[in-house]
Length: 167
Image (cartoon, rainbow, N blue to C red; front, side):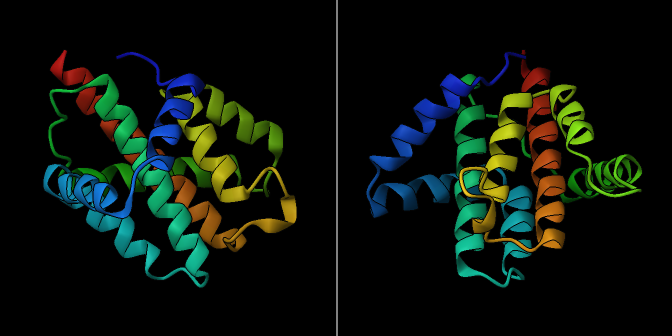
């Protein structure tokens, strides 16, 4: 499986910025058909977020993730089942909990990202959640941010795995 690079992410971001509301609606309709369990889980969890801007951030990150994989795998990616998502989520949650059991450490976080199957995409998700440009501007509480890092890590890992199974 090819790596999704910062260049690919930037190109996808530019494409999203040029879309009008109806184009974005069609993209989301296709996402819902192609990956119903994944989209349902992520958007369902986002409904619990306190800040409306955080919900928008989640939708944006998921759009970038799904369009990035679509770019590398134009023929489509096999659907992720609810069971696959739940099992992988639990594994990712346990791994992250063990890495950060004594609190957050930036060097540990960078090690997790750099050793991940799609490091640039995970870094993008983390940067969006934590709003790296302005550290005080995150739309997520610390607990929400941690949860959505695990959710996006799960989604990326499964899409990466499913994409590799096509080749």
